[in-house]
Image (cartoon, rainbow, N blue to C red; front, top):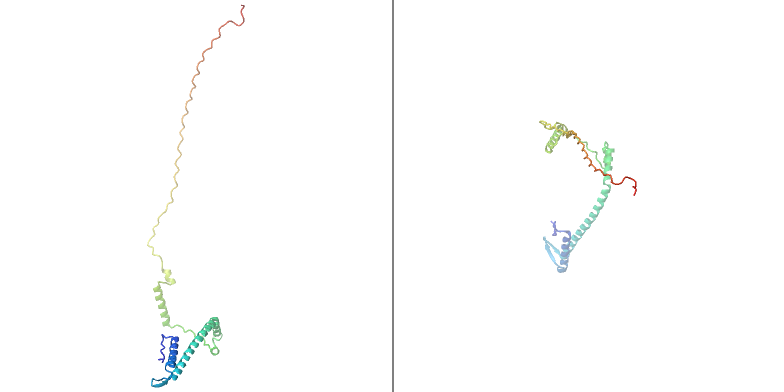
Length: 207
């Protein structure tokens, strides 16, 4: 347990302020004091020296942490730039010297471990897990899919008859109308005879 009042919930800034206040209070109010603390006698000067050493250490932590944050930023940038390149280089070396573990050790690499073949128990467990997964998901294999057909019990055919063309009405026979008898013109009215004029015969008589 720290001799200061620092807890997880207390920031370094708060601790630093408390330590500085203790130093100021001792120097101002008890410059010649003497204290028995944990069965040891301390003068004010000794306590101030110890407290100032603690303050210096705390300030060094702040400085180091600030430097670490800056270093981490630089590291992240470089790793993002060269990380994939380094991985590609390692894969190339592992391929080149796959059968030369001593040579790989020079580069700080170990050969890839050969994948051990699955045992009969592992294969059975894998098959059982796959079957349980298919059952849970309702999926089927290719052969099972081919075995699935529609369940048709009968077929009803409904004939569709094209509508009959509209019947053309038969032509009506034309009945000849009898010719009207000629109408006789009414007889002309008889003209009365014009009487001859009376008088002497042509020529002059002796007068």
